[in-house]
Amino acid sequence: MTSLPRADHGEDAGDDPAHARAFAALVERAGARLVGLALALVGERAAAEDVVQEALARVWRRRHALAPGALDGYVRQAVRNLALDRRARAEAEARALSRRAGAAADVPGDDEAERVTRALSRLADEQREVVVLRVYEGLEFKEIAARTGAPLGTVHSRYRLALERLRPHLERGDA
Image 1 (tube, rainbow, N blue to C red):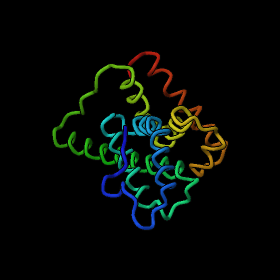
Image 2: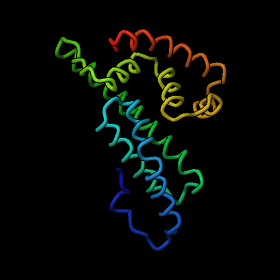
Image 3: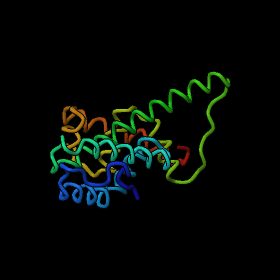
């Protein structure tokens, strides 16, 4: 799946081999889940894999400043932030291109993953984030509230509203 950055893969003079092993285990254990999270946010597998690779590289470069027991959280947060940044840039580029071309962007094919991604892209950012964290990350609502900084009731409302907005698009198959 994703590998550690080559330039830093080796141990340097102050590197703890146990830290490197823990990071490698994290990549093996959570790699597919991280790609799933990024895919839900950016909508394209290649872009999602790039996001995960960049997140892992960033965390690896900062490993000495991070608490070893919290690497999972650091990596997930880095994936989330990079994916949201990438999606925002892609949306801005698509709007600019659409304005220049005078036409709407092409709709991707009809496979189920693309339908779900299109449906998710119709949600407000806050709603999409709650759905992704709940469905793809498997977080409890309380954990989502802590992660996003939103009150628990707000997280519940965002999730309920998101499901109400997603349901008709996914049932009709017009996502």
